Figure 1 (cartoon, one colour):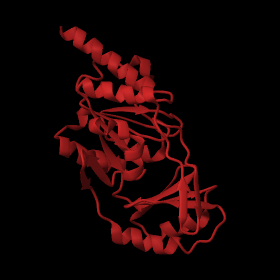
Figure 2 (tube, rainbow, N blue to C red):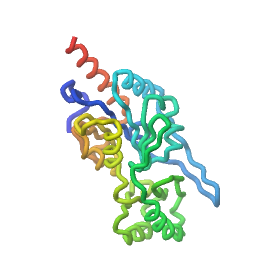
Figure 3 (cartoon, rainbow, N blue to C red):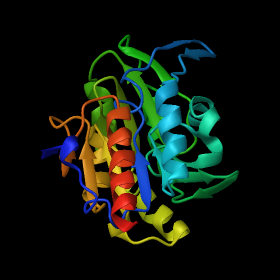
Figure 4 (cartoon, rainbow, N blue to C red):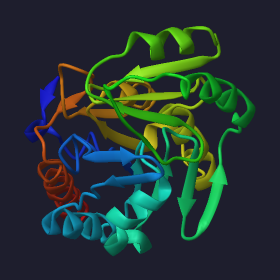
Amino acid sequence: MKDITKLSSEDMEHVELIVLDVDGVLVPRGTIIEQSGNRTMFETKKIRESEIEYIKKMHEAGYKINISSGRSLFMLMDMFREVLPFVSLTYENGSATWNKGLVVQHTNRFSEIEDVRKQLIKIVDKRIKGWEPKEFIITIHTTSRINAIEKIVDLFPDMQCIWNGEAYDIMHKSQTKANGISHLRDMLELNSNEVLAIGDNYNDKDMLDVVDLAISADCDRVGGDYYVPMPAGVMMWKILDVSKEKKDENI
């Protein structure tokens, strides 16, 4: 992988859509969650003001911006309230996309998810911190890996279970960020070589594999064409700098 400072105007020549992961890219990893009975409390993170401005400037430069995350729609809307006019939100690991108020669901696996959920709720383990509220996938926050969770998911061959170091994301194998990008490209009438994506975690791997220009924010977990350290503002600054160079070349 090359350092992001090596990104050139030739690399960006065909890019129309920029896809940004959230945790580990726009905000630090980690979710503070507490659950007791019917009450669930968790912290909503906010992106830096500087990165809000970068997103606005990338929009002004003509790029389409997509936020792709395993988080729920209501949490993403809260996190990105200031830039909602300029972005689309693909949420819960590629399950659906919000774009200017319109929600398009990319896969419907309700019955399969419910079958797994009914088995998982039987687990009683002090290491379970809480279940994050979601529509299409199951996210269980734990203090460490729990063998009982993984064994139950293994009973369902069409399901996948991703441990990210703090939580399990459990979903159908069709629920991937790559699938979300594929549907988003169709919605925006774009080709695969017109997409740049940045991610840092295991659930980003399939997304980075299907785009023409992939950037890793954690080379120990996912690969890419380029590497950028957190925060993503460094990458967005470089994209804007390269875009300016490209415009100057065309004058």
